[in-house]
Length: 297
Image (tube, rainbow, N blue to C red; front, side, top):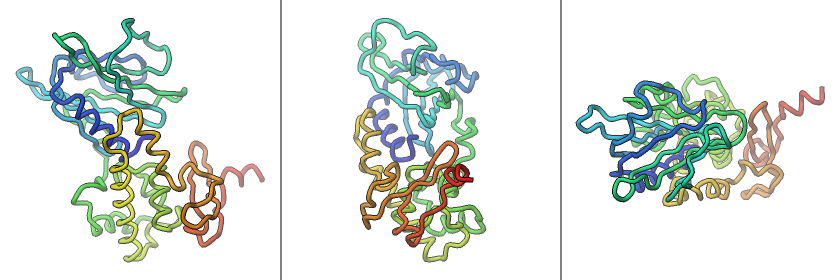
């Protein structure tokens, strides 16, 4: 799933290619993709894109209302298997709804008002979770409305972070992934943050000392800023590969830890998994794998 650094890179890329351009057409091609009906998706057409920004793991495209009234926002959540593909030109034949991974196509005006470049939203697999919202305000999207503070915001201070953890009885892994606590961190970067901080993903957040909370705060900010810098300026099609290349433990089960050389281990759940280094994070003790434990019973 694209997380804060990748969505930040996509927002920057789209901003360079869309700002100041007029939306020519927006065509939904998958029944499941559009989650709103008022305003209609067609309300974007003929409007000028004035801003593209990231909100947590959401992309927010603002189209100026001009004389026709307030701005309209196209808010996109790529979910686990969704992606955005920029295209300088499109096939002459119109796409067929319901065929293949294509979920939505947006074109901007080209020379003389003809449809020009734009992007496709695609989603692989059968679990259709990619979501598109056409709204008057980003806060009209429930997932955006419940977002916690953004870890790249200047107001996200060590004191603010410590306040979020105070009284929190859940494990660190779950707290870092909770979008209502901190916006933008998902499965991959929570693994990377906890590895860099040398903390167990199962450690209760409330058990952190003041020094540990400050150290974790620094690791959160540094890890995300470093990943954003690595992704910045990449073309949309290169962002995924850049993310994979930058991972130290996530997705690297069975490989040596780049810090200590121990074998990266995994804990599997029903629909996800986490990776960690026993030597760096758990005092050399492997964590119980829930899925394997059930199979052995």
